[in-house]
Length: 355
Ligand code: PMP
Image 1: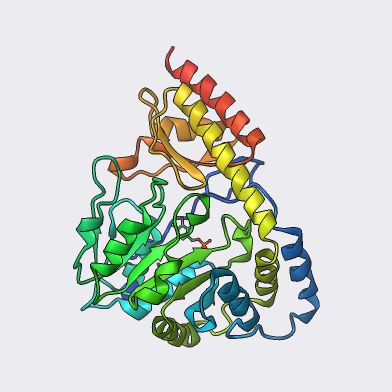
Image 2: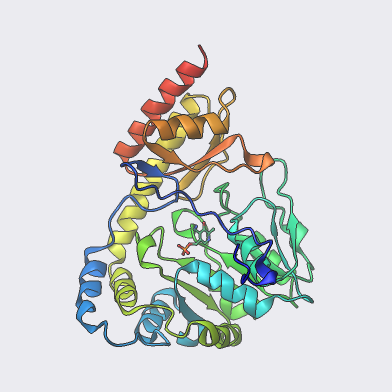
């Protein structure tokens, strides 16, 4: 740390993204990216913007907003485009949390919520998942805090039914509820249709997973127009040109090519079913996943060993060290070939460890 570093960040523990090593070619099943390239239309629309990069992007992402509003059947004033959904989470913490209104989220969930609260000096409460790693909706009723729920949750992959999400929203009439739907396209029920009925709901979405655009950094927030205005006030004050021209065009292309996305989602869901069946056969246990990853543990081989030995064999999965989940590995549902390679390696590793 330099002597110039602001005291307020001195004890900050930054978010640790999944590894993106460049030393060799890995089968990457660690950051829930798509195994498929972005839609050809997304690529061609993006390419058209390359010779306009001397101009700033539209600070209100107007064309993209209109496309999102029409696809998700909401008003253009009920949607806001962001530079990856991490920016949405940041904006939500800035706009709706402070010393009087802390944040609340599960103890096992997307690690960025805690880091975002820390960076803005916002207090937070972590509510333990139950023993089956499930969110108990009633734990969040009348919280007096800004609620952050990932649905499906990460890294468990477990989805709450929309009915339970609605109870959490209705149970916090005086607080904002942020529903992070990064993985909803793979099996969750979206809360977007609830927007007209609740003035305290925002839904956060990303193009990183189901739309194969993690590298483009695109997400959006859907919610009541007044909440969107608040978020936009903060956005204009921090990063007014937050979505670049190339990404905006790629997003519009992707939205106009829904068949491509739908086909890829179907393949991921089939591959997930295949992976779950094969993992069961190898003795793994896991909660049924509604996402593009499976969170699995083996009764005889530790999470740490699985992670390390897979990496030695050129396969990356995600391992977390929090005590409750250290025996698990989170495996992104990749292509069938990637999963076959993973399963072959797991068969070997389990055999070796049992010698
Ligand atoms: N929410 C959840 C639950 C996630 O797992 C991720 C991906 N790490 C994000 C949000 C952020 O995704 P992005 O910034 O790529 O949109």
